[in-house]
Amino acid sequence: MPIIVRTLQYATRSVVDISTPRAQCLSFIAPLIPEGLQEISSVPRMPSWSLQELHQEHNTMESVLTEEKLRELAELCHLHIDDEKLPGLLKDVESIIQCTKTIQNMTINENINDVYAKSDFDDGIVAPLRNDVVTEGDCVDQVMANAAEKSGYYFQVPKVLQN
Image 1 (tube, rainbow, N blue to C red):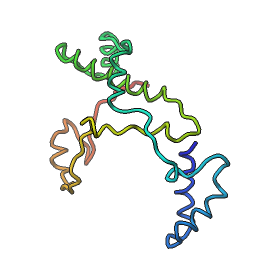
Image 2 (cartoon, rainbow, N blue to C red; image 1 turned 45 degrees about the horizontal axis):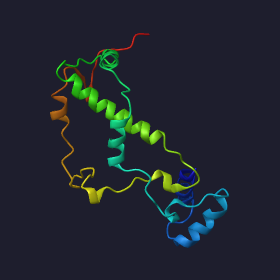
Image 3 (cartoon, rainbow, N blue to C red; image 1 turned 90 degrees about the horizontal axis):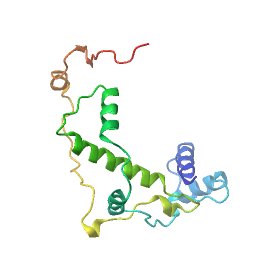
Image 4 (cartoon, one colour; image 1 turned 180 degrees about the vertical axis):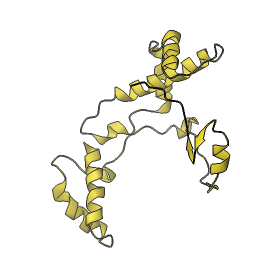
């Protein structure tokens, strides 16, 4: 529900003159916000889960994917998985599934605190960041050199699904 407020705020900003002070914008938006909701940026944020907890949860939950099911999924996707890579891939896919299950099981009440993750910076567990560096983006010829078949600037692939 609080996400509706943020979307509503962005939608109404385009209607309000950009030079309008923030206080006037909020007073314009306030009557449009349904009762019981508040602007997300004004809500204190308390974390409800951490990356470390997601990984700990994985060890306690039962397996959700078997090698047989993974092979079946790969076959449906027309992918070949080598036998020696299967256990590692199974572990990675299962970890992703467990993390999404943990997030899906979160209860989101009227309290916005339920949707923010704890910071694990103190534990040394963080998602790696990359430098924000501008790179040359005009490399169409290099990318298209990898295409088995191409049509102009598009990859041409065989039809997978039949009518």
